[in-house]
Image 1 (cartoon, helix red, strand yellow):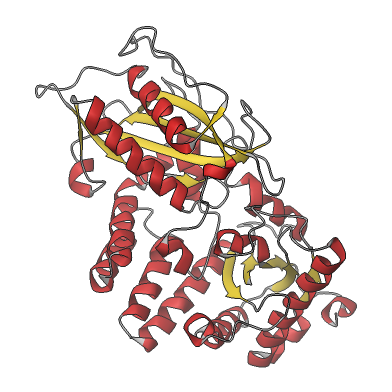
Image 2: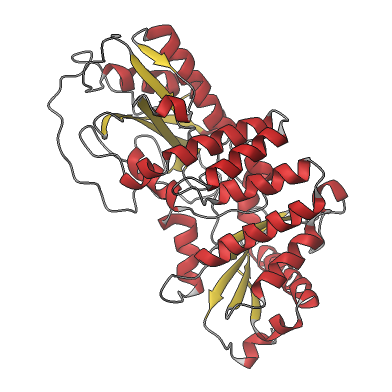
Length: 433
């Protein structure tokens, strides 16, 4: 079953492990947990006067996306287009709020929205999300999905097996730097496929990145609010990474590698998605040495920012890695790089195992602890000095990030092992757990 390794350290201070769990799971990636942007106001009329908002009842995903998209464009308060009488439009891939990943649901939403634009809105010309398109100062569409406690409810829910999801989207005008439309709809849970798409499924590491926070901050904006400046600064890198993801998923790893390397050269391009992509591309190309170096760079990226999460797949109900070499063949290298990149640093690591909501609380507690201990033992075998700078504990299913309870790749993040960076030295009793 998939597990995560999670390291967290503040830039100026070391945070408690429990605070880091909240930060990684909710605060960093919550559109509702960041301060609201200053309202500037927007006195432009709606494109279609009196256009209705989507219903607050939960619908099928197709119906909810349709109603949200129509309202998003009909109710937009937007300056007239240029001499061509058409707006350029790009879609920055929609994401899952909790993880920042693209999923089958968000990918389907994006495709459905693009089809509606082509069918209903001839004054919008849909263009690729690329550097060339961004240079034209287009309208940009962003959106996200999250589980909620019920119909019409805005705040995200952490309860397992949600019954309702909320979807929302905004249009931003890169000419004015403002949000020009924001609409929300609700979806029946049975219509939502939360499985991560290929790149995010294969990526070895996860983190709550600043760009994801900026994306969600922009998604929280209302007409007249400014687009988050951090989001604007990273747009060129985001477009190159999106190109790399497409190329990787289309079986073109050499092309993908070029896009990821180009993204790193852009302002705010030092993103974990780019580092993951370089590792995956080299691995797909059969370049073992380059792949190991790239994974080491992934580790350094996380440790430099105080946050690292690496996915391991365990056999169900055990503390042993999945025996299929196609899945776990790189795990010895991953552990070697995590240990070797961590050992020279002046850090201690509190290792906490997590479990999905299935199973009894007592069983989940034992299993999560056993997996944390297993990972700790593997790291100590690589670097003996980590024996005095690590401890292990289990959190059971108390802090899910996805919460679907499917026990597959969909909710891999719920079966993670977190590494929280702590002040050294640990008490000797903790180091011997």
